[in-house]
View 1 (cartoon, rainbow, N blue to C red):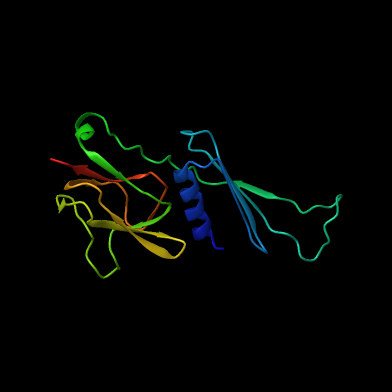
View 2 (view 1 turned 45 degrees about the vertical axis):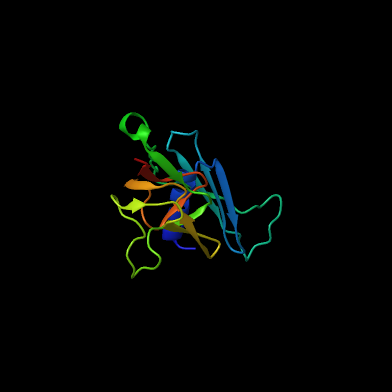
Length: 164
C-alpha cells in the first residue's frame, strides 16, 4: 500500500463520518481514528511487524504514530432557502460515484437536463459491480452534488432536482 492509497483512505474515512476504521493485511496494520464530528482531526496509526525478531511481552515492536494532515470535514449541503423547493436524490448504496457509463462516453445527465422517472442518472460501483442509479422523480437537474469518481455513502445527496 503506497502513501497515495493511504491518503485517499484517510479522506474517505473523514468524509464517511466513521469514528474508527481498522485495516489489516499480512504486512501492514492501519487504524484511522477521527475526532468528534466537525473537529476535522484525523489520527493515523501504522504498525509493521518485525520479521527478524520474535515478539515477546518484554520486547514488543514499537508502533509508529504520525498525525495525518488535517482533513476538512465533508461539506454540508445547504438545503434551506432557495433549495427547499428541490427534491434531493440520494445514494441508495455505498460505493464510488461515476457520472459517465465509461471514461470515453458523455455524462448521463448535466445541470439543466430534463429527466423523468426511470432515467439513469449515474453509476455507483460497489464491490466491482456497477449499479445504475435511476431517477424516481421527473424534473430538471439543478445541481450535481458529488464529483465524478468520488466515494459516496448510503443516503448521501447526489443531485438536486426541480420537480416543476
